[in-house]
Length: 246
Image 1 (tube, rainbow, N blue to C red):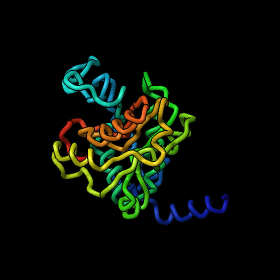
Image 2: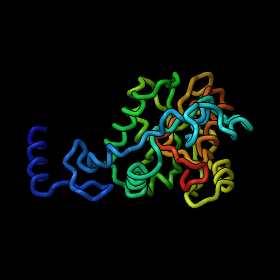
Image 3: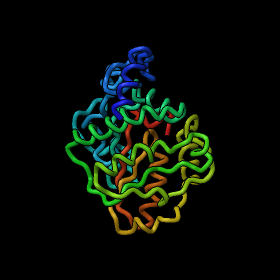
């Protein structure tokens, strides 16, 4: 390990690592995410819908948003930690679609730090990451939600279940309209072989990004029908329910 550190220091001196987000030399804590980009991760803040976590622009008071007043979502609590824009959106896109697993450490570090700043966090007995299809995992090399959820489960001291929900097909949400996302998500996720393990448990469903909510709502319904009390956490949250993404 000491030799590895010496070699890394030598190579970094000759070829300083570049930030994958902005392209500048990164000399901070994370070799491929500079301090400027990391520090620009913008928290969603406390002004949001008290149920679904939709950020409020003009209201400093937490209350129910209009969609939640009209129809209660299939979860008891939902929050996103960071605004899905700027360095956050760039980092997640590079991480997911560019296969740059080296961004795992800054992302999981930000996730852990973000949770520590929350005034309230629901009790959970089991963590369920939103799944990818086998084709998606093969093409991408990993499920980004699972990778980010592993240290989260350790931080919370709970088990993680990766096959309570199964995804079939490989059509992604990016590029679809809000209505198309709802339809696509409703037919893409089905109960997995271990869905019975969530019965009677407080489950935290985790995903990387929330935009329209179609994905987490479809997954939360499956868990709820299996007898779970479902809360939702996402790394990022889009400011508009009609933004591109999940």
